[in-house]
Length: 219
Ligand SMILES: O=C(O)c1ccccc1N[C@@H]1O[C@H](COP(=O)(O)O)[C@@H](O)[C@H]1O
Image 1 (spheres, helix red, strand yellow):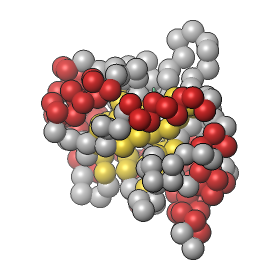
Image 2 (image 1 turned 60 degrees about the vertical axis):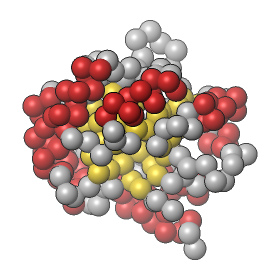
Image 3 (image 1 turned 90 degrees about the vertical axis):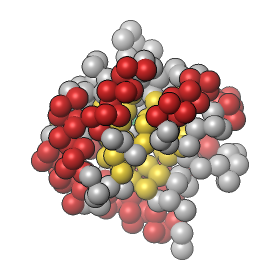
Image 4 (image 1 turned 45 degrees about the vertical axis):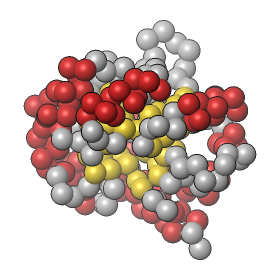
């Protein structure tokens, strides 16, 4: 029973502080140049120091090369590495062995057969289930505020542990937790007022709603 709440894509000291004060269990720093949430190594380092000892720090990477990983690990000293691209199970294992830290693999879900990938990635320390991106050219594989059909998870082996993401927000996270019973939830655009602009009130509302729903799910 984890009941973890992750706020991803934080890029200012002020909004990071809001997430920390509100009790986020994990905070994510995005190292993807095309993302509106991308942070430089220097800023990521400073944000990571601010969060040190207060929460788990996660770095979000997309099909990273070895040098990208080494730089991110040195700057952020993350507790968890989130891989959100098309990394193969072999590459996930290689990265895990290289960094000697836990790795979370994101899987895009649009139909029931997509869940078969859970078996292939059993070597990852955590699995993140996200919606598949829109089919528009240049779309990023996450951070799109799109939810998948949560009913697809109905038949999932209840012993499987996963973090749920994709289109979560303060208004739907309680329902998502009730229906899918995840071990953790993750949000990025659902706590923003515009692309990359985290909204303090929405961060607080999301954490409050998720915390209440996790407590209710275990009664
Ligand atoms: O946030 C991004 O910019 C991003 C870019 C590329 C891959 C993943 C990204 N974010 C992750 O996507 C999911 C869902 O985000 P949202 O809540 O629907 O906006 C989440 O796990 C983010 O960590």
